[in-house]
Length: 321
Image (cartoon, rainbow, N blue to C red; front, side):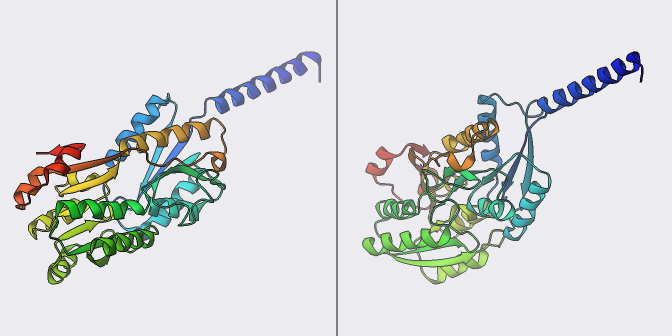
């Protein structure tokens, strides 16, 4: 090979290497988002995208989102999680406990950010809040004890209530610890609890017929079962609906005692940012909710003939009229 050809070969090789390096540096990270799809993830996605923008990410420019939803059918979550791992996304953001569990089954390598998971230590998702270990970090959802606190608020709101139905998600790993705390609170308050198990995507008609037969005076709806149809049925049966998720009052339920989810959803984007910048997920402490809100739907109270105690209205962070 003469000198001219050798120089041309080296130049071409260097150029090819430069192009490859530029392509690598310009690679747009892909964030997989996994949701059950019931309740609607619309609010979560809106706030999460806002959080990404606050951290300097613009969808379509320097980050991509791959959304996978089980469309309300828990049996579809595992496949949806596998689709994201097959796409070799850089991070999976999983909204609510069932989605986090499905993501954990699908991969132990791709970082997973919990966008709210109930009792993640108790359900085996992480080793501890301070040092989660493995490939999962993010935000702990409400502790099971908040379910009991919600029942205490219900007692103030409905002092004559003696029996309450709990619409419980049969597929959510968080359900068992939640029901345990509800039973503890119920015993202390002198309230009987009837647990009615459903799966996301089930029709609620039979559940409310059962609740009526049991002569309950209120219905607690687990957040992973929250749906407008459930709240509408509760109101049609003249049963006050409540939960520890603001979605219940947005849909027309009586009240919610809930963490400030806006902060949680926005902070999920901060975890994504730290992981993309090289932080090992197992070393990032899991955050817990620090702000809680009492939301009262006064419009629903009036429609159901319920007089909300002035003391509760004075404590409410939001009153829907």
